[in-house]
Image 1 (spheres, rainbow, N blue to C red):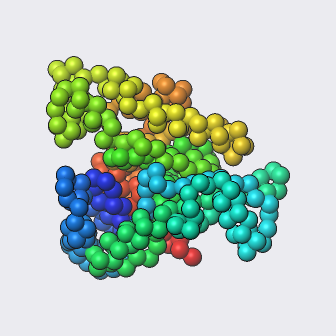
Image 2 (tube, rainbow, N blue to C red):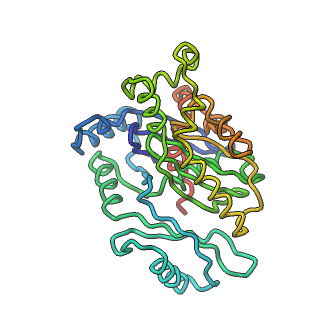
Image 3 (cartoon, one colour):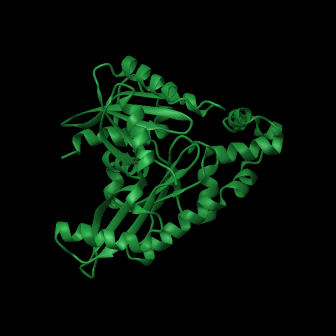
Length: 334
């Protein structure tokens, strides 16, 4: 099964194998999303790109898993009395209708029991996604000649990748930040169990936009400059000043997420913050976040924790976290 992460700027593909030793990467691809250019809105163009990559790199795979990301996803945590399966579903829907302002009839909804609290109640994570967004994603994948096996959300997929690949995940509490081009998925994971999710409108595009504005250059040129710290002194670029202006919303969201989880006794503390995703490679970001939040902040590359063949480029690993987490689901569907 192919894990397909259709991002704002790039489409990421991954397939895995599994044996007694664990998972191994069969193949990965990071391809430019043809719809990210100005004025390009033809869905057929996107379908053609996915079809072309799948035919060339995954000729024997027809089944796919995909996901939805961004701030259009509604995620809420509820404490619900321990009930039977049917009663629990009804209780969750009642609670959701009381706390979610959006019309749930226009959404696909689901929930997951995260844990049993000291009070005996169940800690529930409720998720809602507009039906139009999901249906469009399914339509794109199926029109690309593939069969959708399941749909997920980016937070779950990146967290799934971390828990499946990193052997230390059972021994620590982390905040996993999957930083993409347009938004960031926040996932709080305790001892290998997901406790909380949130999404924030912050991504690599925000940092590129600030550099582009300061130097009066195109965003594409700004992106290349950010990747070249050897040129920063010559250009007078101070990445801390750039991040200080653009990253406060993300830092606030991370702090509030940790505060909420500790206050609700979902976790005791946070051992570290892990950065993954395509925009997590901005030089100096981990040091700036560590200084600001007073916590250990590290980059996390899934390809450092799984057997790889010749195909995957190790430096692209962070961008593949969601796609790899989706591919893992082939062995977790039951």
